Length: 133
Image 1 (cartoon, helix red, strand yellow):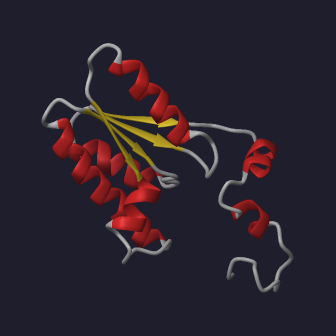
Image 2 (cartoon, rainbow, N blue to C red):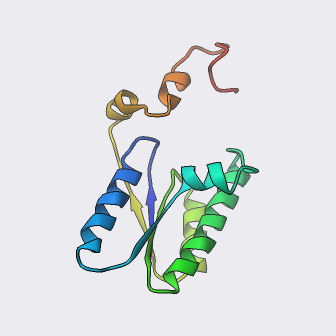
Image 3 (cartoon, rainbow, N blue to C red):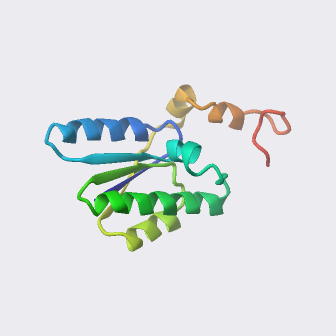
């Protein structure tokens, strides 16, 4: 089984994945967590954040998740993954994929802002630290 945890940055995807792993470990159920941020930093440094690169990232993560899943390891992919089309592609490509959307109020996300993304997004247009338009 592949669980695809999706949601905005700071929504709690990784935290929930860890809690699921810890809970199922007490039942001696094997789980692997594939954290998109970690894989981008270590294995997929070539990928940026365009739609095409985001799709490729999810395809790569799905491929890896399927390898674990084929050995009866429940695999959780924790990724922002904002596009229905790539989530649906993963579900069509691999067996037993479940999409779980982690929802969180925007005010809470802004308060958490572990990566400073919301702070940057709220900067005025033209600010040197804001995202390019």
